[in-house]
Structure formats: C-alpha cells, structure tokens
Image 1 (spheres, rainbow, N blue to C red):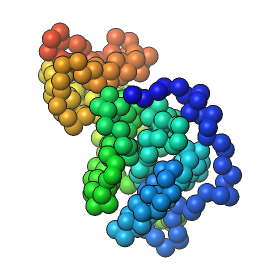
Image 2 (image 1 turned 180 degrees about the vertical axis):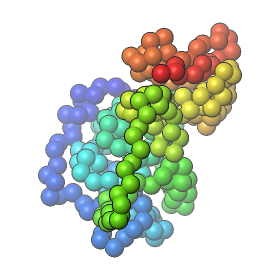
Image 3 (image 1 turned 180 degrees about the horizontal axis):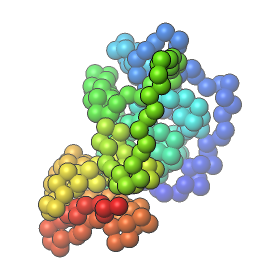
Image 4 (image 1 turned 120 degrees about the vertical axis):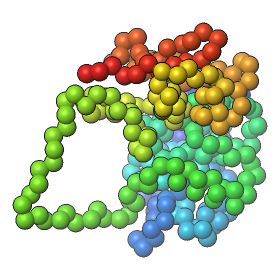
Length: 275
C-alpha cells in the first residue's frame, strides 16, 4: 500500500542544478520526447536505448527532483515514472506533476497491489507497467497513449513564422455566452469565461463518459470499464471517488452541480446550466 507522507517524500528530493540536467532532445531529432524517470541507472539506460531505436527521444533522470526540474523547464510528450525513487513513493506526488504537465504518465512498478493502481489512476496516472516490462510492450503502450491525444509542439522546434496578410483578418470575438465546453481533443473542460477547469485524467474521463450520454444513467460497472479499463467489483470506489472530486471542483461554479446519483444504479449527467 502507498504512504501519503508528502513531507517525507519531498524532503529526500534535493534541488538539482539546472546545469546537470540532460538535454531533452538534440537539434535535429523530431520524434516524441519521453521522460524516463527511474533511480536504477542500468535499467533506465536499457529502456532509453530501446526507445531510441524506435524513433523516440528518451530523457533519463534518476531522482524526482530532476524529474520536476525537467518538467518545469522543458516540454515532454510522455513520462515513464518509477513508482519508487529509493524511499520516495511517487504516487502521492502525481498531483504535483499534474500541475506542470498534461503529458501521459505511465507508472513503472514491481508492485502488484490493485489498491495502488486504483489510487495512482485517481491521482493522475494514465497507465501502469509491471516490472519487468519488455521494450516492445513499452513502445506499444507509449504509442497508444501518444495517439490518444494531440502532440504538443516539440520544445526544440521554433514556431512557424507568421504569415503576413495583405489585409489582416481580425479573429472573431469569443461569445460571452459560449457556455461550458468539454473539448475531448484537448482533454479540457472550459468555463463560460474561457478559463480551463483543472481536472485529473480520471476526473476528465469520468465527466466525458457521463456527458457523452447526458440524461442516461451510467452504472458503476459501465463507468469503470470506460474510465479505468477494468471490470468493476463490489467495494470498488474508484468511480465514486472520481465523481466526488468532480463535484467538489464543479460546486464552486455550479452549486449543486450537474451529476446526479441514482440510488443503486449509478450516475447521470443532467447537463451544464445555460448561460
């Protein structure tokens, strides 16, 4: 089981001078940038060599401090994160990672506890890889995650030059009554004023699954398969926790919210209020 002792985890992560950080990508490489964070240097090297052979740009780091330093200064497309950096359990630190990146996070772990996997998915992880993982499976899972979301502009590429128009065409103004919007391609939820609601992966997927069938009751079994990609079992609280956190985040804007509990059946999305 994981420990949620955040103070102990943070205490062992010293600040790493920026000069010691690895380069994210060389100047000519154009493949997706993969941050490989593991304290086992030999294993990290083997994984990075395999990823490089398949056109990916691996960036090895060996402490959580280095991981945060890279993410706050560079852009990456996906993260392979060891569950343990020595005594540090990284699962409770996932919300911290989510404040600086929306890149898919694949947890690399030797822990087979289901409770840890459930907690990790709720806190912001996208997938779990059990050690020892083969290079082929790692590449396949990374490619699947990269396909599911649009790739950001690589950090080492300059933005394209602006096109000079003979007659500038002004952008249409954003309608003040555009209302709430769920944008699956961006994996974001926007308020009527255009600001984004900060959600974890599990929270966004739960809201998206409910909103896709607005007005219909979605059972816990159905939502567990859609959001967590596994079978629901009695006592499984993953969906309930995701809905609870969604309601807490939405309540500031929507009061009672837009997700209704249907006793003994599941949940129903009643729609965002009209502005």
